[in-house]
Length: 153
Image (cartoon, rainbow, N blue to C red; front, top):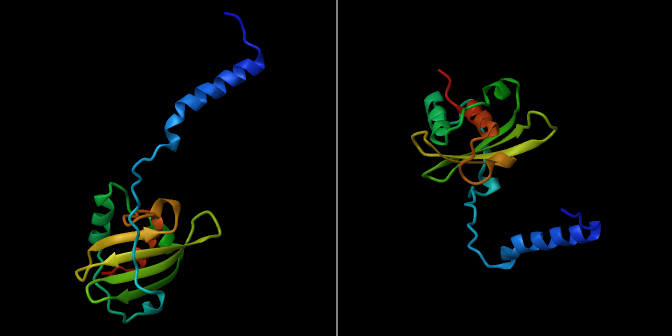
């Protein structure tokens, strides 16, 4: 087989690439990611020792992570004090938790939001990290906030 001059080979590759990408300009159905809706920031209060929160148990945390086929892995980060703040807000039906969690390897802080039912079921979670977008976050930062607010027995 005869070898093509470099410019011609480069042109052929670009034309073939263009043919493979012809559908990029076509309208397609884009599914929007469901956003986590939290209460206004000024409704949140600091969690202190006598704050009355729904009972978040170790079992409820485990069930939440199993629902999304992932593991609860924030306990060690919680023990190493990666939870910076923990606040709550109630809107009658739900209790919303908001926390700040230090990243494990970087000097960053992620905001974490959790929505709880009155009986302590974890309804929705969101985190600012790459793995925590949407309403079903299962990252270690969510796990850290849950560990920090669960009832210890």
